[in-house]
Image (cartoon, rainbow, N blue to C red; front, top):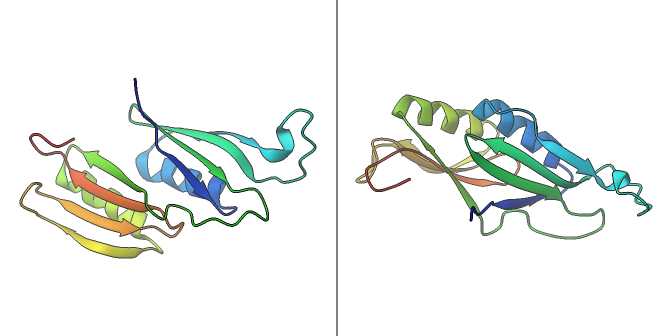
Length: 135
């Protein structure tokens, strides 16, 4: 049974998933907007549900409905484990554009390349090179 992270945004879901698809070389996300729900009468063009397939995994996401308060990704971190230090560094640098460093990318005791960041959409990421025993 696979588990799928589900993250939420305040109106930037489509933009965030398009960016993540670009960073990871994934196909565009499949998405449905609130105003596309049959018979619901929503006017909002925000995303009610989306799926982005990345390297055999699925990231699910949505926007909070308009007027609903929420702190996107307050306690969620997504980990991207890559086959090489160069690939991990490239993804880290791409995700960092407009974001904040939590832990600078570099070698650690468990990986040749490891870093933590919060991207411009507020999503927290761990990006690392695969290590023996850690995936």
